[in-house]
Image 1 (cartoon, helix red, strand yellow):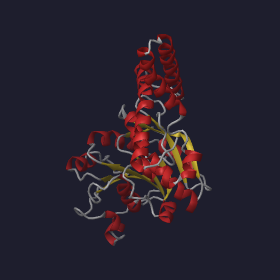
Image 2 (tube, rainbow, N blue to C red):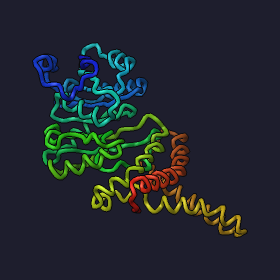
Image 3 (cartoon, rainbow, N blue to C red):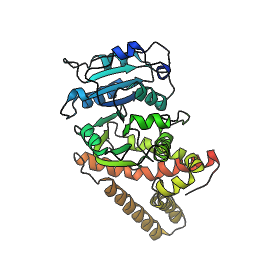
Length: 339
């Protein structure tokens, strides 16, 4: 296994493909490169790399792992180096891009330094299932330029907010397609914007994108499905830039069900104050019924245990409030109103 560090402070993406880099090329050359952007999460990164090292593939030399450290943490570098398998396969490489420039920059560094013709993307706080790599590669048929896998939260449930477009935390993209579109747009402030932007540019300039629900990545942090609701803040900007895409493909980001749950829950105290207790009870019962419906929909796949079911129910009750809050905040910030 090779652990390579770029010159301190240098922009790895700008480095030429020098003779030194060619000499570092693993033999045989891997056909798949897994890019993992990371920042100040060494423990989570260890779990992610461990899952990647245990992928069920016929030839372990067929893939490499490329870790890109956006935080320039020595602990992160040491964590990567400590995970060398005895036989050095699969190859593991480590890069430091410009510090603190975000996941889009890190992903661009990763795929540009990748040796594989197929580039897979996964986040440092996620755990790919053992057959993730094999499933994703098999799903990328000749007519497709990219494939989106399925994301699940820590309980095993489908997140309350599905990523717009191509989820960069679980995606398989041909390197040639990334070259054609120029990679990720580094102007987006949060990853929530580069997912749909990547999808739109791939479909427009490279070719069709498919889906593979069998290529599963599970988030290791349980509250991740709640934090992901912050992405709704940038829905307004996406709507402003890509209104047609938003209307056609992003309608589920804050469904009317969310608005209804929030409205019923907030309206119940008003009914109580007005002395209409029956209406308050009915409002709360309907709200809870909708929350239960949301939880059941998220449990399309079985979770690990009873705690997972309870966690899914609890987060399903919070998701509508967070989703609506961030969505309205974004609408005010970007001065555009939409539903």
